[in-house]
Length: 128
View 1: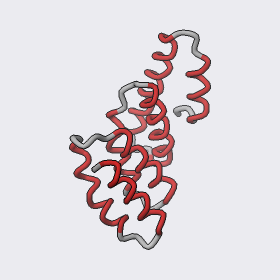
View 2: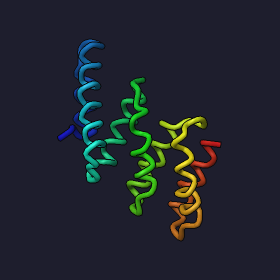
View 3: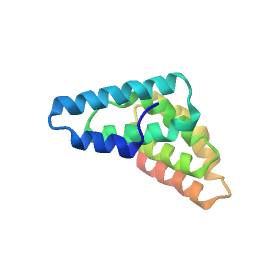
């Protein structure tokens, strides 16, 4: 099982050298890739949050783009919120995966929940 986000942050901060940091990130990236391959749904939002942290550190996180789309399609608001945040940070206007998000954006814009509609509006404003 992979680390929690808090534990990953602690391990990265405890690294004395850049090589140690790269090793920690590489190990966790491998665990996240394994979780994605095995379709571990209960850890999907945690893995995307860790990918966002790795992205902020400057490491490649392109392999998590589809996971963001799966979270955006989730009916649960916390997972949807992490999915939209990942979509805003990990995707660019040129990403092919962005075409998959149009149906989810349309459905969320027509949602009865004003917070879900707000997430969709924010995403459209940032991606356009």
